[in-house]
Length: 117
Image 1 (cartoon, rainbow, N blue to C red):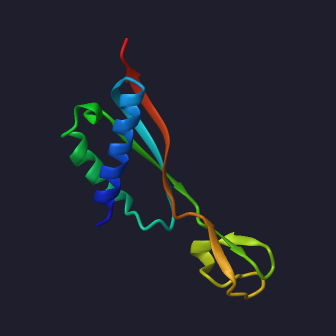
Image 2: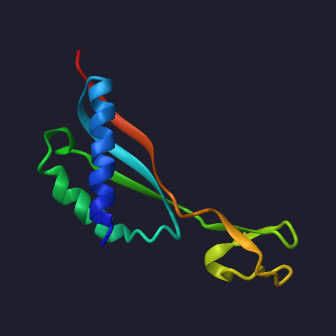
């Protein structure tokens, strides 16, 4: 369950950003989560809800997750395709010479927050 580690890392990053920007309360956090990142969104949300109760900055925060579709590029034909649907073998030319372009990331997209007056 690596969701726990990712949540604590995201919260630490947000605490650093909050300190730099004089944020007193985080209302919501939107994360982009890749379709093949391996993150189980239900576990991730459960971990967030557990830890936010322990940190005043996050007490009332809402976590929003946006799933980024996985896209693979084929070096054989130069085309892209849906990773989850077709896997490693290109459906256009049959080449195994492919690599993931997007879809395995987890990044902070947006933070709604209140700052000191």
